[in-house]
Amino acid sequence: MKRAVFAIILMMLAEGALADDWDVHRPYGANRPIGLSASINVGMLIANKKQAEFYSGRPENANTVDRILHSESYGNQIWNDLVNGGYISPSAIQNYGQLKVVEYGAMHYKLSYQIGLGIRYDWESTWGVLVRFDWSRLNAVGAFNISSTNGTGILQNNNQYIQCSVGGQEDRINIDFGVAKRIYVSESFALEVDLGFNLNNLKVKKNAMEIAGKPYDILDIWGGNSPSSYTASYEYVNQGGVGFGGFATFAVCYVVPGETSVGTIDLGYNFYYEKLKLEGYSGFAPQHSIFLRFNLNTFSFFDK
Image 1 (spheres, helix red, strand yellow):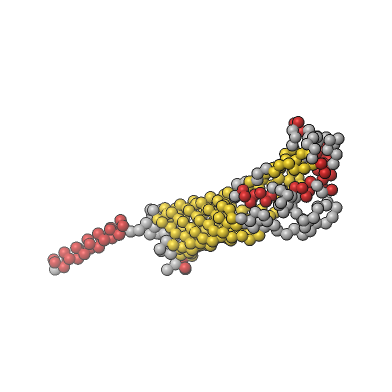
Image 2 (cartoon, one colour):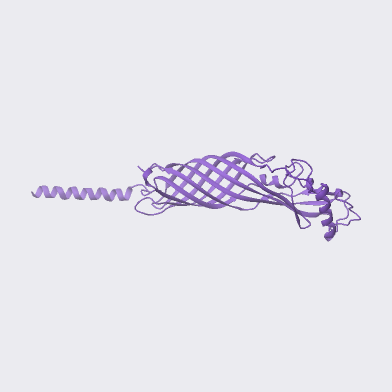
């Protein structure tokens, strides 16, 4: 009897020791999210200035400054505004035909917000697959200088040029398909790397300039013809379209504590190398974004 009791005590002590050993050596992230999760993210998109040149109004672009500046109706209006504003002398520059663009400045995008939704499925192996949808509205800004064909008549501040602003606005949608890998560095934190394929859609919404304090729309709604304020315009056809590329993501993830997997809060960086469809500016270019993402793992019926 004593031997039996002694054997039982030894077995209990051994079981406790094994349990303690498991607590010490069990893998990090034992309460990690498993199964299907949904996410929402907010962040900032840092767009490549290469595509911003689409809105510069250069002669080779789809929308040009010259088309407006040298049209009969808009040209006369611009000339009158410059005369009335004291920018030019009507005796030196007698009509809008003697105005010309002498320099186009560099364009760039302003820092833009980005919001999105996503779904993903994670396995116990810490691998997962994902689909993400992100939307941004971007504003491109820049300037150009106008002068006269004879180089005289510019009066403002005794300068030879008049500086005018130009810019545009677009909406972008990014759809990402990829795989994700998490590396747990503690019970509460993990590092994540995502790689995958990107589809994007761009819609050009505005392209305009400002001369003598008055705005003028340079978006081509005249089918490539000379614009006139006296004739009806054509129906605008989006000058953007669908493009593609790839992406890579790096994030630091905080695992929300709980008896069951709740989700993560991620701070991360996205690198895109994508082709955006913009006439004349459709080559591949890098894009960047910084985001804060909230993953909620509530779909337990997909778990093992």
